[in-house]
Length: 256
Image (tube, rainbow, N blue to C red; front, top):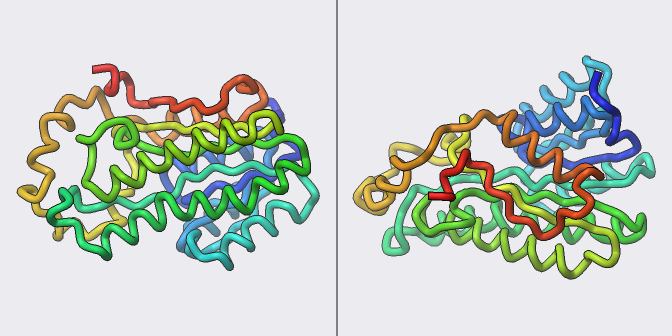
């Protein structure tokens, strides 16, 4: 039986209906957290039901996490029981691997809104409650595209580099008040993030072909569970001295 070291905590996990988010939600719940499963569709309901059926505690909030109304609902659910709150900003969308020449305003706006603006809004809403408690943990889920310019298109790469800046700023700004903010940067992972775009619209000649050498050098594709274990560690009190860390979780891909 897992140690219940997250008992007394309500932790928001965005994109919690599948992939890394689902695995993170399940691991946190197994260790005693009340998990607020946020997702755009009813897969979030399914994960919350799965957790509750196994004796854990979970609440689903369905909707667009960049919507202020949904942000408020998530924080309301997390604070309803007066528990210490935590935040895992995992939800994200992919771009079409286009260089700047071919990146549309629509693709740019959507990618930045979900991958960077939504985490900012959730952090802004959660930090006051963490300050009041004198303690809090935030983990943002970045990407190998947070660390290099050759892992995705212009929009996705910019959004994930921006998430690094947001993470480091919050880590430094609130360190003395007991709030830790870290980022996990996965490489290739077996998830459904590619479902967030229309694959038929990808034109290799617009950027993907130039990225091929980097993708071909990837060490391996990870499981969502292996990425989630790193996230859960950084959320835990065992990581009390980890703050402002940008942690690759890519099997050594970024070391090359």
